[in-house]
Image 1 (cartoon, rainbow, N blue to C red):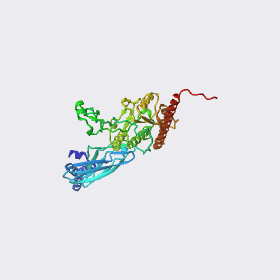
Image 2: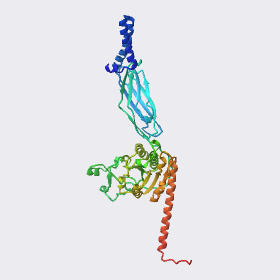
Image 3: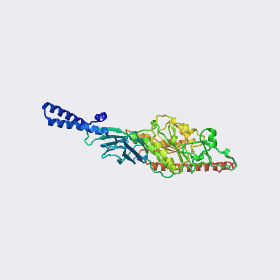
Image 4: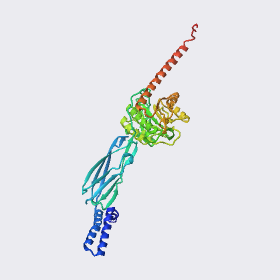
Length: 441
């Protein structure tokens, strides 16, 4: 009852004050009829508070979001299933679901006629143009009477996550240096002449098939080990994203970082659909949720997009090179770079040496700088002199056109390389045939 009295609204307090005032005036003036009116007006909010206090409602809420992984700009549907498991009815329910402001306005509902076994389904849509991971909920509930005299607040504790992934665009198929540009754990090998002890194993990684666990080695080492000979020879690709704060310009969704993230997401999806096993590497190192492992393209795309949805700018000045310490070459490397300087050149050369085939999209970040258009910087030309196959990306450029241009430059570089090899082979053959007669001038 004390909580119910504290929940009196302005209208309820006004009724109570008016009733008490009427009773005092009636006593002073000796008007019995006015006394009855004052008692009625003052008793109304008190009786309502007593009724609300004795209401034993037990609300249950089930919230579902479909889908939980949605692209930026696409809507997601939120379904609310409300039930009353209490024995006595309650008054009006005023519901408000807590939603981050980037997903839209907070939905509000008014429900009435709530009795024992009452059930109601409510749906609403959310949409965000900003990538990220958001929590929908908890829901706040306000119980009120039909007269609006008393209002009590309650709140659920549960929430549901919603991941908004970067925008992606379909990319055309381009030559990337051969069908098998990457390396798996090892090629399938025959063990017909060997025994079970000859099986080579490695540590278990998240996503590995449990049927590949080698229990004898696991018992000896003390941790799960999987057989390597059963893993197929696959094309591997590393998508490197430069997310350093110093390497990008602009603010919000119009910044060069968002353009880089969108490009990385589109390329990762494209490579997964082409049969590559893709991992994501940022300026802070390899993402633990996207390490190389054998699984279908659809299953590989989800973790990549989830990792890119929560990528934030980092204050690191230099690239983390821990992922370059592997003994095996990393297959195809596609780098999405911001502004690079002389301090980054050694790492870029290591990345080039580490890769079987290296492609780069260099963002001309000065074009994203607010306050006017800057002079264009040919970052791709600088990378090309190092051996990268690179193109520039500027605001307003279509990513599919830039990707196709990258394919044409890759094919052109491949033809030039083949021509150089032929010339070298021809020169070697001529040099080994002995001294040549000089033609008269």
